[in-house]
Picture 1 (cartoon, rainbow, N blue to C red):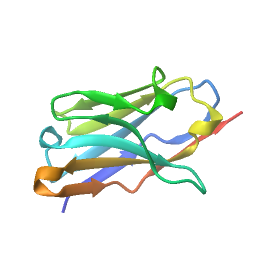
Picture 2 (picture 1 turned 120 degrees about the vertical axis):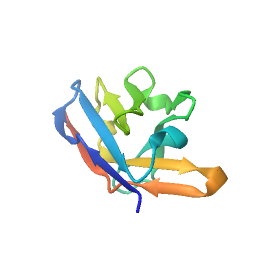
Picture 3 (picture 1 turned 90 degrees about the horizontal axis):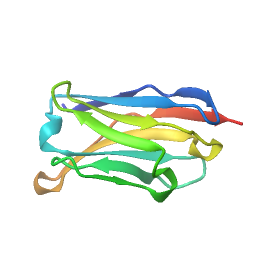
Picture 4 (picture 1 turned 180 degrees about the vertical axis):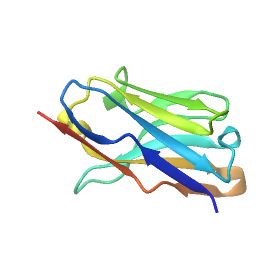
Length: 117
């Protein structure tokens, strides 16, 4: 069974940085598109950043210039570097792997990010 395990969340002050990791097992990240989503209390889950199999990236407008998504296929891990964090970045962050061609859609369990003022 495919597993995605997020880590790296925690409590940080506004302006600080965190790096989230998503380690995959039983699937090669080189053949799927990867993304990070987040869900704040009382809000819908939203796409934060994505990276295709070819390496193209896309970001939510609210995180452009502050967050960077990257992948290390050799380590089968995707990262989200989050800099200049704001209180409004507080949410549970989820890793997603998808390949619509094969109807693959996998999710991690989430990692909490809390940014204090």
